[in-house]
Each structure stands twice: as C-alpha cells, then as structure tokens.
Length: 219
Image (tube, rainbow, N blue to C red; front, side, top):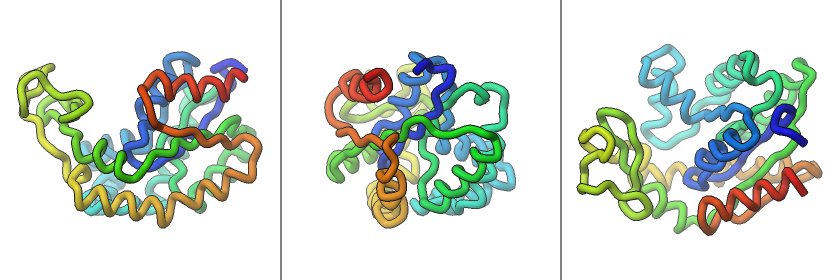
C-alpha cells in the first residue's frame, strides 16, 4: 500500500505520542496529519464560536462534546488534500464519534485502512504530560525531562517565557486520563473486532515505536 491511498486512525491516551508518530507517518507516506488537538487549539486561539465552546471543556480536562468535534472533522475531511489519504490523530475519541465517522466515510465512498492503538502505562503518561512546557510567545514545545530548554523557563527558539498549560497540570491530567479510560477506551472494543485494528506498545524511542507502526503497513 502506498501513502497516496492510505487512510489511518491513530488511537491512544493523551501523552501516548500520537502527534509525533503522525508527523513521521505524514512525512514518510506524504499524507496529511489531521490532529483534533491542533484544530481545537486553533479554534480556541481564534475565538471562534466552536472554539469558545470547546475551551470551557478543555480547561477542566473534559472531552469536547461530540457534535462540536464532528463538525470540525467532517469539514476537514472534505478538503482537497484529504482526497487520497490522511491520518486521524486524536479522533475518534468515543464510540459515538466512531459511528459518525463511519457514516460520513460511507457517504464519501471511502473507508479506513488501518487503526493503530498506542498503549502506554498510566504512570508513564503522567510523567510525560505534566512535564510539558510551552512558549507563550511562539508556541514552541519543551519537556523538563525529555526535551529541556537550554535555560530553565526560557524558549530556545525565541527567548519567550515557558509556561505549563492548564491542561498539562497534574490534577487536569489525572482527570483527562480518567475521562479517557471511561469514554475513549471503548474504542478498543469497537475497532478490535476488525482485522484492520492493531495495538502496539508505546514504549522505547520515537524511531523504535515508528518502526513498529511501519511494520503494520508494510508487512
């Protein structure tokens, strides 16, 4: 299978590395990465109607309502660069979203080729997520353990102040992981009945995990 006809879903809890792996897949197979998180953050930053609604949920670690997310995703899938393939990163998050996606794809006469679930231990996720820092000025991301700035609290790229986003604080992270287990974990059951579903361990280096994913496509 070539990247030009590959439609993928990448599942996993917050902090599993879906964004990083999606970018690597996008580069290798020349298909766009569609990140629900990026779409939501853009809407929040631009203070759109959907963005304002989404922010109230994001700030307390809750899932954004299905109708809001689905409206954003459906619009994105109809853009020209998605006609031949894409990676869905962070969507669907619930069985209801998965059902909505399936119905939408049928209307578009398309289907998902692979569903990859990245599995990571709870304590590992907590360390990954609470250590993230973001530049207030340019948005560059860092991690106090895995990717620390050269000077504590200062962005290497522009010299801006680094801060911890509300959705990266420990209490919020715990709530996000709890919500994920309660609502999103059902996706494993939804998709695991399909031969196109694969679950891999999200431990090790970025390239090591990427190799596991590539093996699914190219085996």
